[in-house]
Amino acid sequence: MKNTVCVAVVVIEECMASAIAGSIDMLYAANRIIEAMGKRHLPRFEWKVVSVSGRPVKTGNGMLQAVDCSLKGIDHVDVVYIPGMSVIDETRLVSILENNRPLVNWLTSLATGKSLITSSCTGSFFVAEAGLLHDKQATTGWPVEGLFAARYPDIRLQSSELLVAAGSIISAGASTSYQDLMLEVIRRFSNSRVAHLTARYLLLDSSRHSQAAFRVSSVRKYDDPVVTKAHELMQKNLSDPQPVPELAAHLNVSDRTLIRRFKSATGQGPIACLQNLRIDRAKWLLESTGKSHESVANSVGYTDISSFRRLFKRTIGMTMGEYRKRFRNRRQTGRSSTLHRSRKIA
Image 1: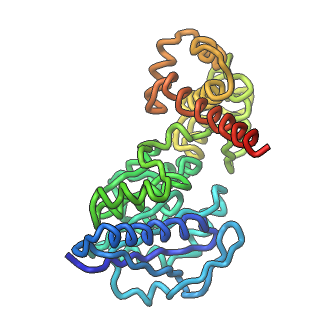
Image 2 (image 1 turned 90 degrees about the vertical axis):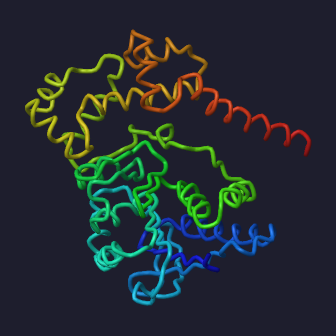
Image 3 (image 1 turned 120 degrees about the vertical axis):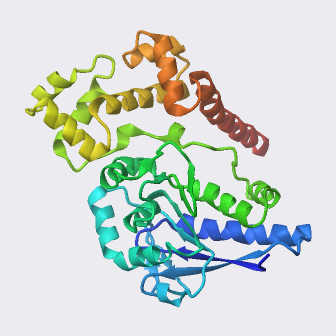
């Protein structure tokens, strides 16, 4: 087995600073754990932060990220990691893709090699642009799943999944999913025990398997004003939504045009979008109120509780009761613990 695993962390303008530093911290922690375990046969991780030009890059939060070299300065790499950008505006995201064509070309050149190519959140767009995901499964950040689905119809998008492996390519979901991605990289190149201890050492939740529970459809904005207006009308009338023909007439477009524009902007039709908005409201009610499951379902326009239970579990990957227990109890426990500590200090 090789003594080192070389990881190229590729930084792009407006990328997430935490995804860069956090991923490197995880590799560093894995090295310390391997040393503490006395596992000399296991390889150590080495990393280089690289940019297209070799110059520092300004991250999304305004920090200036130093780099070790340009893409041309990389002569060997075992793992390529492309973090997500702090951008969900579709026009800006497409502009960043176009401004970084040398990165896309570089990724294309790696297609026939043995490098493991990984990405988190919107970083998956670069892998898709390079043509490496044609007719393969992938995931991306949930806020941009509509754009991804519309831009790359040949890719089998698994938007609810946290991690998706397709041969030598691994894509991860939104934001902090880089943690799950790096744990998988550590597992592949060392072993499961090292990955497990890295998660424990850094206090990471390694039990996450889906980003569906974190998706919030109601905060999205679209470039298409008709879709944006339709979205707003749906949100206002979740308990008694307008049928598609009526909604289309209200917006002065035909049924067919409304459906086409929805699919172009969101990757799905208006009925699917309505269901997601209903799920969003139900999640919030389960987190923030003590309403019964029947009352929650009625609040979002479902009189058949059994039907809504099935929809919720199919969409979120857990039952309504499991969701409430995980997210509402966690919020309450956090408040209780803080209050307890405050009393002790006082």
